[in-house]
Length: 66
Image (cartoon, rainbow, N blue to C red):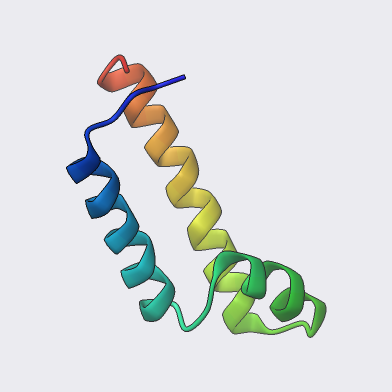
């Protein structure tokens, strides 16, 4: 279990909210409802979410050593 400073958590929350607003919906909405409706927009959004997640894990674990 990791321990983060409260300011880090607040900034992370704002970034998630900003991303949700910018993407016109949450990851679950795009993944479940959007893909179920065969929405190209949701497919692009989900691929972007997944790709960004993979890159983030790689950078934090292998390059930053966290």
